Image 1 (cartoon, rainbow, N blue to C red):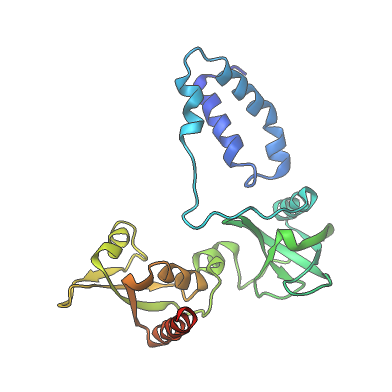
Image 2: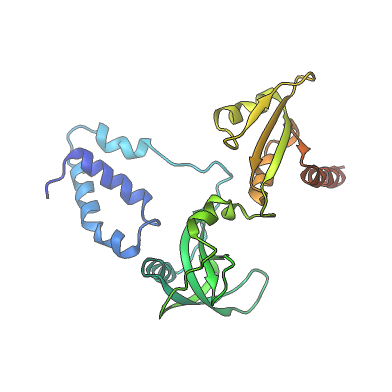
Length: 253
């Protein structure tokens, strides 16, 4: 059908940002629309709308890294298995191991985190969730058997509970921080949690309280503030940071 300039612009930007998120057959089905959209934009007399995609970019908040490479067929197999809820035989090489191992996998969903693609799944008849990196998959084969659905685990709840933050413990942390005023500005605009509370004590530093996941991601975030943030509690987390500070002091001495 005829495509106006606004629709063409939407298709152009969708082609740039949705390739990894859509099933391969769906993305392939849209290719004629993407090509039509590019033709519409290139044929515009005015250049403002044509230049719009170059003026809108998505950038990572962390250090940018080179995306991991993996076989296109593996991605297609995993997408198809997730879409049709089929088991997959995955030949997978774990980190630090020389030889790959076969696993019968029940796929639940795909997560793109930074430059790495993960399959969140369960093995065989087990219910405990696992994360498999697509670039460590050597071979995949879609099976005829339906994926087994867990009674205690769902993909949505796994993400909501901070599963992709690489949990250290299942219970959330009652976090207490002492922060320099300059450091706390971003957290006032974008809170760590819905229950975040901020108060200013006598020493001039800001005290922040929030309930956060007990995860490696939480620790990495706190480390990014360096000496402008002090972990006051819980004690177990403070002890971790004290040990790290001592190790860093020894390293840089």
